[in-house]
Amino acid sequence: MDLEDYVHSLPKAELHVHIEGTLEPEMMFALARRNAVALPWASVEATRAAYAFTDLQSFLDLYYAGAAALVTAQDFSDLALAYFTRAHADGVVHAELFFDPQTHTARGIPLATVLDGLEQGCEQARVRFGITSRLIMCFLRHLSEAEGFATLAEAMPALTRIHGVGLDSSERDQPPAKFARLFARCRELGLHVVAHAGEEGPPAYIIEALDVLRVERIDHGVRAADDPALLARLAREQTPLTVCPLSNIKLCVFRTLAEHNFKQLMDAGLKVTINSDDPAYFGGYIAANYVETARALNLTRVDLKRIARNSLEASFVDDEAREPWCFLTCLAAFFSLGVIAGCFFSSLLLCLTLPMILLLVNTRTCACAPSIGSRAQDSRDLAQVRAGTL
Ligand code: ADE
Ligand code: ZN
Image (cartoon, rainbow, N blue to C red):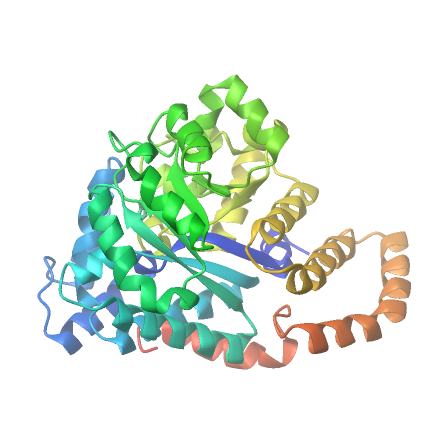
C-alpha cells in the first residue's frame, strides 16, 4: 500500500479547520455572483495568484475579504458540504469545525443564519458520509472582550448547537489573558474551550491559554519548542496540539516542511495531531498535510497511526463513538504491514472480529470508515466539488 493510500485508509479526526478557510476561489466567485457581492479580485486565477502570504496578518486580510461572499444559510450549508466531501475522501470520520461569527455579524448576517447553514451541512454529511461533527465558535482576538461577550449573548439561544469556543485571528500583541472573563463564562456554560496560541506568538501565550483560559487543546502551539519547561509540561499533561504543517509553511512560520518542528514535538512526547487550518488558501486538505509532512520528516507508518489515533482521542466525541474508530485505526495499521505473518494473523483476526465490528459500527454509531459501496458516489461528489458546482 503506498503512502497516500495508507493515509487515506486511516480513520482520523480533523480538529483544526476554519470553515471559512475551506472556501475555494471557484465557490467564492459562484457565491459572490449569487449574492451580488463585489470581490476585490477580477477572477479565480487572480485570486489564487494573490495567495502569496508573508505572515498571518497578510493571510487574514484576504481571508476576511473572501468570506464576504458568504451571505445566506444555503451558502454556509454548501460550503460545509463541500468541505465534508473532501474530508470524507481523505478518511476523516469526525470533524470539529471552527467558524468566525463576528466576521459575518459585522456584515449584518445574523449568527442564526450561519448556524442554520452549518448545521444543515453537518447533517447532510452525517447522512451521506457517516461523518460526525462539532461546531466550535471562535472569538476574533483582534476585537475586544466586550465584543466577544456581545457575540456570546447572541449565541445564547443557540447554545446547545455549539460545542465549544475558540480564539483565533491576529496573534501578535493579542495575549489570551485579554479574554479571561469571557472564557471563564464559556466554561461555566459547559462549553469546551480551545485557543490558537504559539502560532506566531511566544510560548508565554501558550502558558496563558493553559493557565488563564484553561483550554483543553492548543491550536498550533509550535512555538512551545522555544521553552523546554513548557515542552515538558505539555508532554506530562498530554494537552493535545492541533498542528497545521502546510499552514505554517504558507504563513512563513517555518521556511520549509523539512525544517518544521513537528517531529521534535512528537519525539518530546507531546500529543500532536495534523490538520489543515485553511486548506483552500494553503494548498492541501488533511491527507495532503499528513503525506507531505511524512515525506519531509521521514515519519513512519507507526508515527502516522499514532497521529491519527491522537486526533480521535483528542476530539470532543464521547467514548462510545471513539472506540470503534480507534479499533479501525489499529486494523488499518495492521493490514498495512504487508508481511505474510501479518496477512495471516490479520485475516484470522478479521474473520473472528468482523461480525463484532459490523455490529458495533452499525448499532453504536453511524460514524464508520468510508464505505466501499459509496466510492462511485464519492468520486462524483468530489468531481462536482472541484468543478465548483456543489
Ligand atoms: N483564522 C483562520 N486561520 C487562522 C490562523 N491560522 N491563525 C489564526 N486565526 C486564523
Ligand atoms: Zn487556525
